[in-house]
Length: 259
Ligand code: COA
Image 1 (cartoon, rainbow, N blue to C red):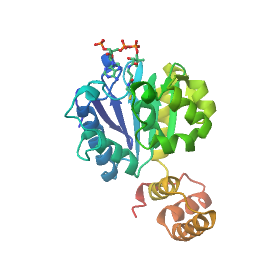
Image 2: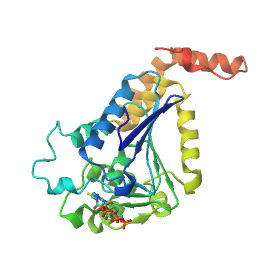
Image 3: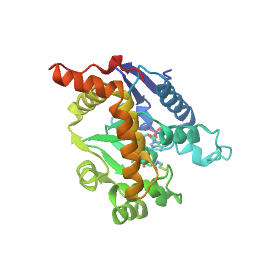
Image 4: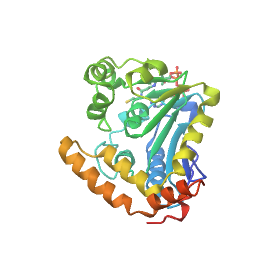
């Protein structure tokens, strides 16, 4: 599944998708979007894979969409079968947890794709920018909705209207990312977390992600939905295994809990 510019590695239930175009700061071209969409979609269908992690090679996460696309009259963004649109649909609809290890610059879609990741970790030299305004463009990947939801409307306006860079600690303090690590420790820290998620009860994990990603609803409607799901989960093999393991004083093993 790997291509020259996108490396895909599977290990211990974790699919690692590495943007591998370091000489262009991992700017994403249509071939790369296609490879990323395929790798992400295939992970949803593979029971052995529980978690997806995105990162970049070299000193950048991604400098965003390949600027050549913006000069190509044939690359009409918005066409559903265009690789970029397939990738956007894939991150929008992914059922399994997605993590990002932001190892440097994250520009344009390098930042907006993070809005779709459940957990985002960055190296201390990472910088984030959504410079659409400076290019006479619009925010994409639903970021005009998801960015204010993540960091608040004032901060989102600042990022989208000025298009300036924010460093990793500022991004963490704004709630754009979870945690900051040194460059040297970033991948170990992220893979440790990814492996931990991969060992959690898989069906319960999918339900939690689907609840976190659901369209807004009233607290009452949400409470009712949670209660119904909670009652269902009490009957699940995963819950029975967790409770049995507790009383038998052993670690739970969710690998036998196919549902
Ligand atoms: N599309 C295509 N190529 C890109 C690119 C992009 N988005 N971003 C960087 N590159 C290429 C550069 O053209 C350069 O190629 P070259 O060596 O053949 O000249 C190479 O990557 C390195 O980039 P460079 O600008 O020299 O690195 P830098 O560290 O000085 O700056 C950035 C890095 C990301 C700040 C700068 O390249 C930049 O602003 N890129 C455009 C980001 C952008 O606007 N993306 C679109 C968002 S919608």
